[in-house]
Image 1 (tube, each protein chain N blue to C red):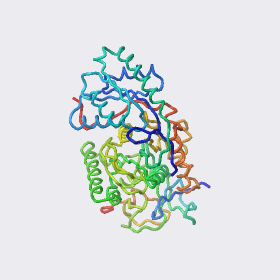
Image 2: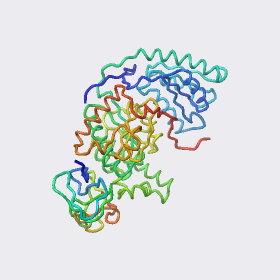
Image 3: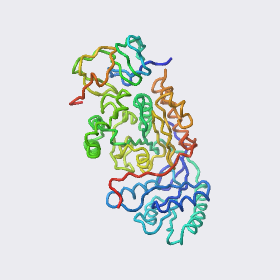
Image 4: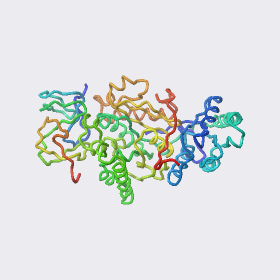
Length: 386
Length: 89
């Protein structure tokens, strides 16, 4: 895998994009963040529905996820807009983000004197941050700087046969070149624990793999009861999946055959290089936040039914598992895996996807980016709000 | 040339149909040679590449996805009617 040009960050990481973001620290500040983004072209608002009304583990999760998003190397600078009475304070998040050396500004709406004044103040700050960010230029980076997120959503019976093995081929190349890949969605790994444990780099990692997948299986049974077996859904059965192992093997095929080097919690930044498993839900939008907060610069997202979703600040490469879907939703799909594999070896098809990955890292817009698929950020929660 | 079936891993004893393949059709294998289907194989479903005796492991992705609940012949459709969960995969 060749080197690529990316934006250098003060913490030594390298970005594929150079975004200035406006992040509300609580959902009550979404309106002001939106007003700022409407006034200042080029600023990316990171709307979300959280920041207050949570305690314990959820609070920790939210801090980690929001701080992780700010630390994502695709983010050049950030403005945090707080309300004032929330739990997740703008200044706490700013402190966490400033530790990485990025320009980060923050203020609270209650302190500034209402939403109009806050929007005006925020727009001026955002303009200045954009100017600072525009001075950053791409430099030579190595595949060792790359974190690639692996995701599937709206899968069909060919996802595990065409798109996922194709992504797995490129994921293995990223790892071989010294980069990192992050596979998440613990519920989609149920039934494959023995295989992933075998691939673990040491017994401690193997124990973490087992613990994570057992917990996912337990949660599924707690929530769904006798319906838990429908994690392999009727649609999966009709599509030809005969067992939970078969379905999950198709899912983990996105991670190729590399050894598992570490298991991290949701939205946690990997310390290891190579293939890393992240505990987290299969729900697409929450899962993608986990990956973005872990610091991936790009995601590869396979789909069989056709999910058009992207992610703010992280380019998402959409890989259709089948040609009819690619043709039906060509505006949303970057790659037709079924056609790519037709008469070509996995290696040949992998060459083309690897090249696309490098072009996207260097600035080529994905379909999701072109379509402005950057909606609201969803965070994983484990308890109800109060 | 379009492939009719996909073999994911060289250790697999099943292949995946790329299209609905009717019973009795001879299809070319990507590994060379051919196989005649013994049943209708819907797109995305599995066809046995070789005979798998009852209790034998069904291998896809190079891993066991279940055991044969009945004798499976080459070209047979392989699904929940003739696969059982493996106790020790």
